[in-house]
Image (tube, rainbow, N blue to C red; front, side):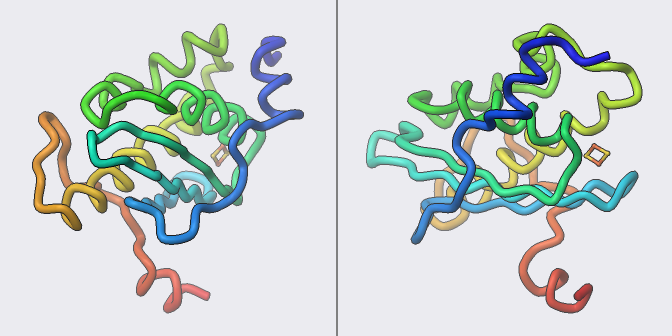
Length: 145
Ligand code: FES
């Protein structure tokens, strides 16, 4: 039921890990399943995403979409990264089964949350970027566990 690309990214996920002193970090929980995704961005002075890492407590589809999404934003400007939607990521993976489409939102939302964090820290505005709705943040996480 998964495409070869999904299986490849699930079995060999790219960019897993964390970045110390990241320029931006976003954590998103998926209310439907309780899975969690965290994205770290390293952004240079020209607003280019130099490096990106992710960590997830999520299902296989979440791992595969995050892996692909990180590959797609690496080397891009923060503005270009806004075009990496869950739809674009799913297309790059040759599709996901319908029941797994919601999983692909985790990566997009976590990237947006990390960009929001970066923009807030640097006092800049990224065109089209809205405050993340479901960023569970550090504090909420501590309360949850
Ligand atoms: Fe939770 Fe896929 S089932 S992210």
